Length: 148
Image 1: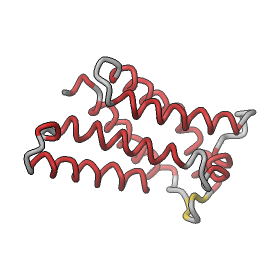
Image 2: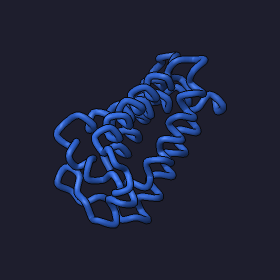
Image 3: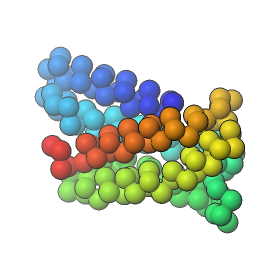
Image 4: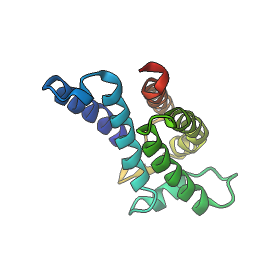
């Protein structure tokens, strides 16, 4: 739920800054791009922090090298977040983040079915998790350069 909160609050914060007269944020699109980037940077931080073990537990049994999977998804989140803010490659980053969200959903399904916890809190059940994932996918699509 923390990524959802970060995405929504930073988007509103950046839009508010835009309404106060900062030209760069005086449109919903750059505010959303920044908010999505911050969300992915926040989620990437868990890949090496105290929540790493919890992320390792989320990796479905079919993935043989869980350590590498968690490390590489963190690297992809950081790379995608940065790329989303660079004109000319933002479209590549958008596609990459979209594919990553789709590709990581089996881990979310596994976590929901096993009733795993992150930071001491049980992960969302499968259907709410699916809705949240669709929200994140929508945010990435809208933050892509095709919606400027």
